[in-house]
Image 1 (cartoon, one colour):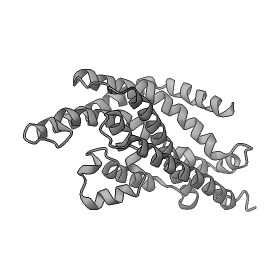
Image 2 (spheres, rainbow, N blue to C red):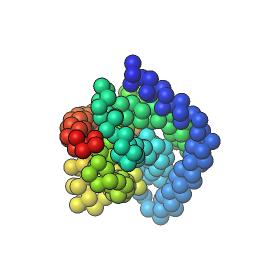
Image 3 (cartoon, rainbow, N blue to C red):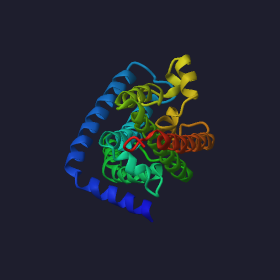
Image 4 (cartoon, one colour):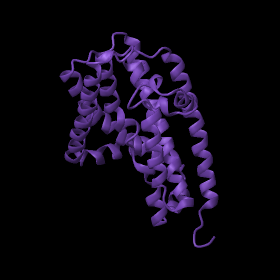
Length: 260
């Protein structure tokens, strides 16, 4: 009940900033349109592999649409602010565990972003560039599950980044490092299979392909093994959950209240 309340409250808070979010959505549309235009230009002289020009248009549109659900989350889930103010000590002694509490709030923001940002952005691209919907009914369930796990993995990563501010004072550099790496090996700019061999090998050992590439290719029905991708993503979710709870226990030992 508490987590559902936190979800609703966060959702309603974001409703108060619809105008600001609309401006950001327009910015996302502009960037997405630029990326798509680049691939259209490249497609005029190159075959673009198994995707083709239309496939890359759909690929970029889907990637651009889900950024607000996977990568553009609250920096560190707000933990750094709690550390700077000292309120982290109060949050850690609450009878509710810090991780699911902050995660529930972030899910409220993600729910809002899905309805008011991701769907409108994708609908715009789908209409302008005539992007078809998936043909197989199972694709919708697979894509939804993949996207939920992608968001959850990103929540966990941001939680761990925020937790590090307890030792470093601030962890923004870790956030931007995470963002930079994600842009390269998550499959956002180009499909994973087009990366150089060494980068593909690195990506295979990280959760990043399951943040962008897997949800998008499952939705576009170009993924070779969607069920296997979901199983691997679930494994990453379980690992990050255990790590988040473990780091929280470490945080409890780290925090000092008036030297005690």
